[in-house]
Image 1 (cartoon, rainbow, N blue to C red):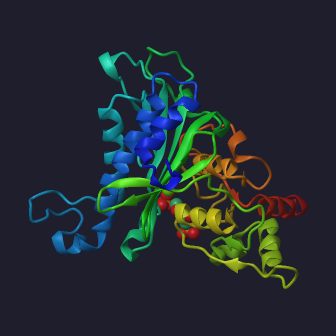
Image 2 (image 1 turned 180 degrees about the horizontal axis):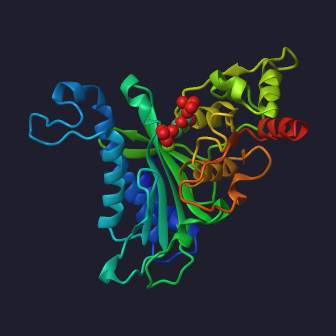
Image 3 (image 1 turned 60 degrees about the vertical axis):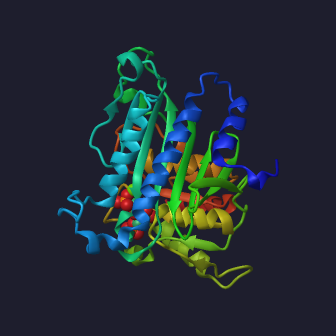
Length: 335
Ligand code: AHM
Ligand code: MG
């Protein structure tokens, strides 16, 4: 079949044979995320109508409670995964603690945990700017048949078996990897089907876009300040273009297609950075590396960090390989 005629559903079935899993559990997880993404997409698309049908905390005309969209997305993804009894645990940026899922026969017999940021960049919803869902899948390390523990969630990113994001943008896309490259699927809203629109996505080795909240410049470490000045220098293919949406998924998605670097560094205001290792950086790093890019905390590989807590924050440098290398060089030199 012609690549582009393939639906995500067909793609998942075809790819199942690439992996050494016979149970299809991972396929079912991706399928559940696909379903939840469509439900959330429908709601996100109606975001501007919230004031008309009832503000948050109030009831709409049907008598249903209005919810904030990030709370809604959190519930949809969690319930979709729990109802299908295919994971043994879920951790979400929206919840303080992880959720234990007993699964079929209440036997704790499933082998995967899912970590997610159900609606990243949700402060952008009010201004009609794209937001995203980010997810990461690990095989549990505690024995099957026992309830999951914190240990199952605190694994380094190198142990991820799948990761992806959904971008609710001008069109809605689901982009994911299971460690065999990155593929992007665009939702045809008329029929509710994702089609393979971006097969084998790749970060250009070099890019010309840098994405960072430059308003915080005075608070940045010297290495980041130096790198920004390097990006702005008139030399060779520079100055680069500055593009910052403030919505991680959108910024990385654009840079993957066009070539670029995204940086959320430490600053005197946010000494550990802002982004979360488990819900944002690890999945984005896995996708980025699978697309030929590089993801770093400024000094070392994001995916090799041993997490110590669920909501841990890290500085994040992510994008075109050579650009991230260059930024690391400035970080090292300023130490
Ligand atoms: P959130 O998880 O509270 O939505 O915050 C994450 C978002 C990212 O999407 C984005 O890249 C970053 O925060 C923007 O932060 P800032 O406004 O400080 O530049
Ligand atoms: Mg977030």
